[in-house]
Image (cartoon, rainbow, N blue to C red; front, side, top):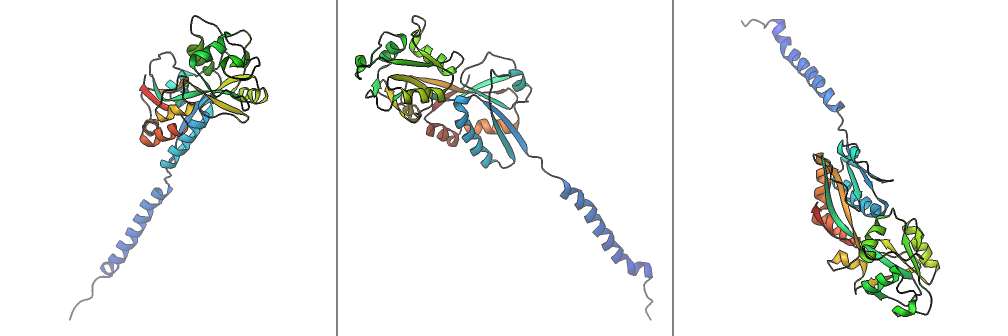
Length: 279
């Protein structure tokens, strides 16, 4: 006759199951409580390139759902100390900055500067030489460049604008000066509005598009958007990313995206040419 198993042995399997269940619950609870904190990129950009950078940031963020990208306008000069210590992930400028330890600069694109006139102005093309003559005051009437007989109103940007420095470099140089009759304007918006209201005006804006009520003037036979197709267009400014030398993985991923075929395709759609890379 077989003897019954002791009660403690009968209960052992149930106890093991109970303890195992408690163990799983104890181990499982902390794991489900862990939340992945999304990483973030803070980008400051000058107003000339804000639309381009916002689109690139949006496209990049869609490809990396765990990364939150915030693009803010750069007001005043860049604070390189904030870039160097990582407070600001990336600063996007249209001119190089002084070499600072721990900082690197990468030219990601070349943005055209479009010459614009009133929509009813019959002039559609100018050589760089004729444009220089207009901005230095040697040519003062539209009839001298194939237009109607009326005085030319020369518009330029204020001295703080990077488009102004690039146009001065291309048109004025060191041997000439901007005509003293030029009207200086504080923004591209003011430039477009003034040209749209004044048939005799000529001005310029950053980018390949013309504001409403104006039209583009080709320079040396090429339109501003030609730069995005790899064509030669003489008026442009650099688009430069400034970031710390030792950047986060997210910054490196953004830089890789910007310089990838996908990123360069976005740049070309905005009429911009390819940049030269790290400076």
